[in-house]
Length: 108
Length: 116
Image (cartoon, rainbow over all chains, first blue to last red; front, side, top):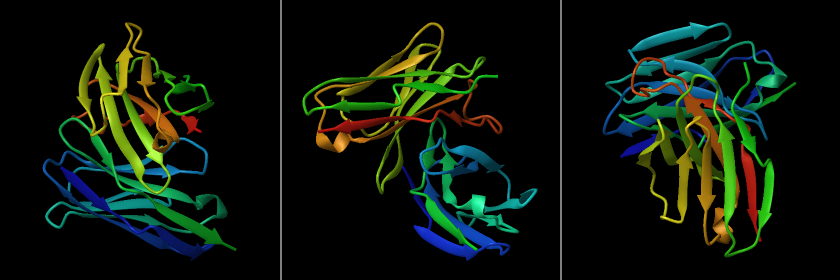
């Protein structure tokens, strides 16, 4: 089975940097995904890591350490529209298992 | 390109009734995944269909079932509804071979089921 942990809530200020952590234990690992979900909307894909290291995509970066079962999503130059739930998901052999999500609130 | 479409957007049922939810995948996607998103529980994997076959199911009772049609659209059926089935049901589609490469699942906006 798979177990994925991430903080329930985080708050940050507009323009700041925030790091959302995700730890996982899995019986099979085939990649880690981050999705963003605004209230009442579909989750949308943000990033994918399968090898150790940092993947950068504009204001968003994602890091993976497979030996530690650890990932983080880094959001820079926060904007109000970044207020959303951020979902960490681990792909096993045939499914994508999600954590409960981290609700990020960005304040002015 | 049209995204993943789900219907109905909202559905209200009473305990013991049956609910049917529908999903149309992105053109070219053959895999459809169903997830339940209940308050405070995150996305829970329900079912995976590919090429018309059920490939995997999550830890849900048999009253949750579904099927995939030849055009790759899918239907989720929930029988004997219980209050705790109230949730957002999300459908996602992807290309065949989830385990290869950055095969990204694209989600629909979901169907909100309320059981009274």
